[in-house]
Amino acid sequence: MLFTPAYAQAAAGGDTNSMLMSLLPFALIFVIMYFLILRPQQKKVKDHSELVKNIRRGDTVVTSGGLVGKVTKVVDDDQIEFEISDGVRVRQMRQMIQGVRAKGEPAKDKSEAAKDETSAS
Image (tube, rainbow, N blue to C red; front, top):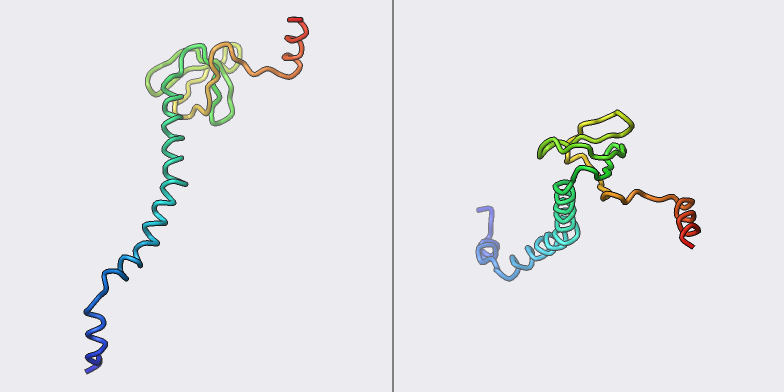
């Protein structure tokens, strides 16, 4: 016989408390991963889909490739058409839009902001 009766009795007993304590670190790691990785990622995806869904004609958009243009036409639920230069129109998948600047809110340079302040005074 390869095993003595003492080893067979110890292995067969199996303490449920020790099994619970061995699984506790894995559960703790999963909870930490959920709050540090999964939950923020889900929030980011939800915010991006809301941003893409609300694109309207006239909005200034920034694509993931770095192109900036003004939306001229919303083709369908998947595509938009925007103008990147005079007479140059591009179709883009909505999911590839990185950011949206609302109508009438172009980014101002510091020199333009200073001119606006001096002309208002």
